[in-house]
Image (cartoon, rainbow, N blue to C red; front, top):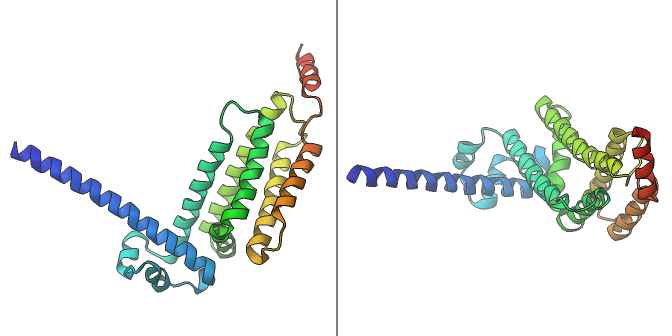
Length: 225
């Protein structure tokens, strides 16, 4: 009986240690986001990140061996949150058209409310210029984003809602426009994002959406008969 109790206690201690470690890593990531946003990646030191949350340098090095690994953790954290929000916007039961519009609205909501937390994207791009590991992370990010948009475009074509001659190029253009707007907003905050969101939706409507989905769908079906 005593052995069972001790095993149970050790299990609780391990779980508590794991949760404590996750909390500490989250604190380090949040501190790094603020420091990178204020001072940039190159000028931020481990001491700066430690001081942000009153941590010791040793506690940071316990989880991350270098400033570069902290940047990677920050980037992975932001991507994880972004893709969780993305999945919430493309829930089943809504049309492909609505999914695409929701993706655009998610982007503009991010710029309107949380663009400060997106500064690490700019930091990463700058640091990636001379770092192959960071370049690969950036490349993987673009591939994932393009794939997700292409999936929605393909679904819309199958439903007769879209007409997209080149889904990959269209996805690249959407991402490039969004990225350019985000970069400008982070640097100078001079955009009227409400107006830009409305106009971007009109542009997408004009160039991608089919005016009469039922007729297009019939034509697509007819080609297969």
